[in-house]
Image 1: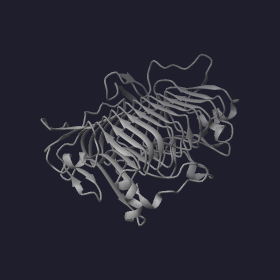
Image 2: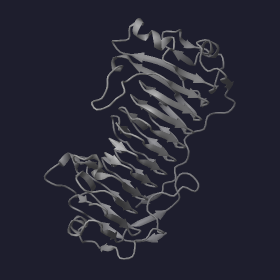
Image 3: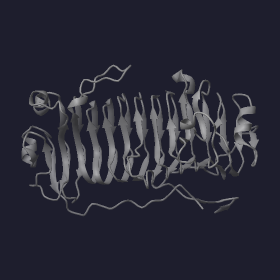
Image 4: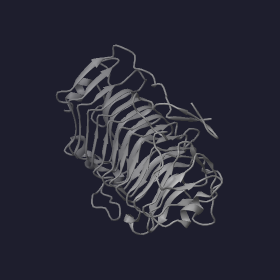
Length: 430
């Protein structure tokens, strides 16, 4: 235990060997410009030339306006440095107020934010740490946000347009909306711990990536995701990779792929999704989903068609929305015992869903295939599959006769599905 102006209890992350948030082993580089409370962090950054490395000294800092970082700036926290954003405000761009900001910037490339606690931005503002370009999407190319604790903000970390960002080893918790990206390119989200985000909300407060390219989400841990999806790709995200993530205790959906395509979702674990899906593929195309394990989920693997959205294309995009060419194979669904649960299914909605319109989806000319998946169910004879308008609720034999799940298998639950994993926070503020 280390006593500072505030008390930090140091612990591992929720999985053995996972270290997130600020670390005593991370030190400020030699020659860094020290910022000592009550000195203003925004003032210090504004006065220094671009490319300055700052050392935020251990204490609680109370900025009264956003900190706008410039090209090449590095904002490094001495262990114990806290930026309390409670008083942050400004008279303009009020909807885009971030505590640490690259919002509407024109020259803030190659920025680093590391080893800080950033918290308590008022709920009428935007993000604890957030960036988005003004006109040129490359104006915020490459932000590295690493080993921070981000808490109690409307949004935790939002990584806007621009290329090649790294968001790694952060402890992101108790935010209304935890994280995401709009128009992001070539970003890596790896080794972060997301806990208890969206709590207290009555509406969806999901983490979301929208209209992105080449996003990798790897090796993250999610616990207690409230009122939304743990990972939601919504709006023609392409060439994304979601792999080796551990999601446990999600109110609605583990991984949702909506009107997106050319993605791979593999080797993830999704547990205890009491109201939604393990993996939900909604009007998306050319997705491969394999090697994932789902335990105690309400819906395991679902494909869903919004007939009214088919054929639409976002301005500036090149691929029309559709549910086609999705390859779902070699996953394991341990359904649990929740009433009304389904293992794998296809369903649809929309005024355009006439029989003629639906025909290539129902006969699977659209090539949405389930192959080699293994299902663990309370009753192997129960109708826990669905192919809407092709018999509705289906047994395993009826599912195979569609045909789906060639070389698949089904077995009986022999032990009760586990409850939520214990939570071990990376940092606990007192």
